[in-house]
Amino acid sequence: MRALLPTTHHSWPLHDAASSRAVEQAALLQQAPHQLIERAGWAVARLALALYPHARSAVVLAGPGNNGGDALIAARWLAARGWHLHIHRIGPPPREGSDAAHALRAAQAAGLTIQQGPPSDTSAWTEVDLWIDGLLGLGANRAPEGDIAAAIRTANAHHAPVLAIDVPSGLQPDTGQTSGADTIVAAHTLSLLTLKPGLVTGEGRAHTGRIWFDDLDTPPAPQHPPGAQLLGLEVLAGWQQAHPRGATSHKGRQGDVVVLGGAPGMRGAAWLAATAALTAGAGRVYAALPEDDGLPWPARPELMHWPAERWSQAHAWRDAVVVCGCGGGTAILPWLDAVLHEARHLVLDADGLNLVADDAGLARRLTARHSHGLHTLMTPHPLEAARLLGLGSTGAVQCDRLAAAKALAERFQCTVVLKGSGSVIASPDHRPDINSTGSAALATAGTGDVLAGWAGGLWAQALQASAHEVACTAVVWHGAATRSHQGPLRAADLIEAMARLHAH
Image (cartoon, rainbow, N blue to C red; front, side, top):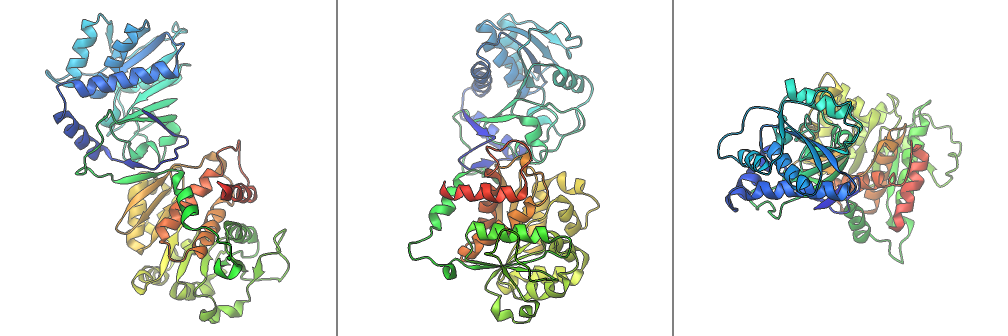
């Protein structure tokens, strides 16, 4: 058993519900009857004992399927260690001969008292130390109703923490979206056999608490490959090892970045992106403002100005990494077509994305870049993604973030970072990745500009790197800088926090 989030150093495969069920069926064929569910129940009990060594009382919510069976087996183990248990079984009787039926019989044989239906009056349960959620697990394919919904509401309203088995009940295992208002808010979640993508993106992180994983000594076989991957901090270390700064390095070898953005009234966005590119290690960084007044940049004299007439000289910038859109408004439109046509390495963000979404010609130009050997990294937030996909709202994106990111990557033939809790990185013909780092500290103005600039600064130093590799490294680095920060993190301070990770 391993503790994964909120911080994981290693990357982990992610299996959706269908793949997880296939893994479970394969594991069942390799073991004696009921052995797998016994292992699962013992894993739950072992984690409860480790997390709450002084606890003596728990409420166990057992649904009709194997998730409920896991909970009943865990209850049997806890009772054997002296815990007082309130066990509530909800749903129809299990199918005869099933693992769930075995778990129910074994609990009854052990003398456990099992109530049918949800708990009602919990006002006297002041001594309860823990709730164990075994209601739905992978079975959450619609909004909880009836007694299951009532049980969820009661557990959430009680003062004791919840340990969820596999997936908090009501949370969609594939998408991380809730199935309605009634979704368990867990302090801890133990994912069994496989790690599910819904735990780590969308609303998942708000409902899972700390995530634990136990493969029950039955790792997935090669015929059940993961559909996505959770990125750990090892991505950051891997990039730093692969792209060291040698003793003879100089600014000419570290690459150039041009940041096109910062229209009047929004210059801070371009300043943040350019500063991030510089701090990431780019050799020379230029700020291309639509109406440049030539004044020095605040506190960053290293940043250089970019004369507007230079855009007509593509040979002077096509080999630089262009970061386009940060605070650009419509003022960057005169140069956007040239950038899409000429820039060999392009990070497209913010207003660059909005202009493409509003202009079919620009959208075609963006899509054609791939066939011309040009490389693109897009960094939309959910609203920008919805505009690019022609969807009516962010909800249409957030309901399946993996699918939305993959659709964007295929439509525009480029790498996409769909920002948000559990940012998704997708590229054509590439397994998507989900970032494990980051927190609500990033929910401040300008942090997206920092991400775009940092990606541009990394790419400038390693033009041979794929856009997908750059994106994965940038989002992990971006989120990792928040690990020790409490409260909102201002974007300019975020850059300094990211700079400190160069030494790690």
